[in-house]
Amino acid sequence: MGPPAIILAGGRGTRMGGADKALLALHGRPLLDHILARLRPQVAAIALNANGDPGRFAAWRLEVLADPWPGHPGPLAGILAGMRWAAALGHAHVVSVPGDTPFLATDLVALLTAGGRDAGVPIACAAAEGRLYPVVALWPVALADALEARLRAGQHKVADFIAMHGAIAVDFPAVSLFNVNQPGDLAAAHASQEPPLSDSRPPFPPFTRETAMQKVRAAEDGWNGRNPDRVALAYTEDSRWRNRAEFLRGRGEIAAFLARKWARELDYRLIKELWAFTEDRIAVRFAYEWHDDSGQWFRSYGNENWEFDARGLMQARHASINDLPIMARDRKFHWEAPGPRPMEHPGLSELGL
Image (cartoon, rainbow, N blue to C red; front, side, top):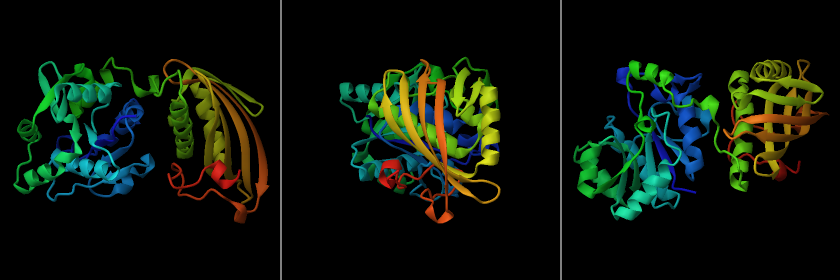
């Protein structure tokens, strides 16, 4: 697994009317979702550099790091925050990417790492068609003190800091570095031939234990968000389901089913756990707690078999589920919902389920 990454979303978005660019919708999903889908398989951890109320990013379960320097000095402040965070995690490097680059290369981190190592320079920056993209870069955390001194001196230009310490330019396709900086760019992103997130969902088969666990956790997080249309995008257009004794085909039927499900199963909270995997199949056990409109609580236990296509989308799901009535005092799943289970919340095995 690669180094950790910091997503830079601390700017003011003035050319987008003050909007959080990372939250702008592309193909029905925030830009942040597209970035995470491409970045997560490449890195050890991800944090988000953003200022203001961190609660607006709570659904993504990311550590949110504010600029460590006042006055919105620009991306260098976010990079410094990322360096300090990565160093605290015990890493020697951190990758930075902007929060408005939805088409990042799926080998971005590997190529930056190899480029920096082969060139023997401290910083590796992405480039395309002769242009340097200095905020898409691999940084040694050992430069944190020098970067802080630069900010103290009122020097805020990323390119100047890079020139001072030395960098290698690593070439990528231009589309992978495309950023949404103004309204016309968002329209261009919609028109791009780059496949939207709904048409791929890394990690892809063949699975390792690590990537199978990532797939399970991503599915858990998605279902805990309780957004039927959003969840349905993780399945192929003609995905085949058996859920209990109900048979479904395609995203439309899946979304309609999930809408009915979460209208009936109130205050739903789900935990999944990997059971087994092969190259393109994953077996999962799960439990979820919910109550009906009379206030009766249940814990539902189930097993799922999943099959994926080459794009990482689930093309078959078979689920068997049993419902156990419980008292409210016997609930074991406690976190703010809807939303993902916090990292510190125990899983099924830890809960003895």
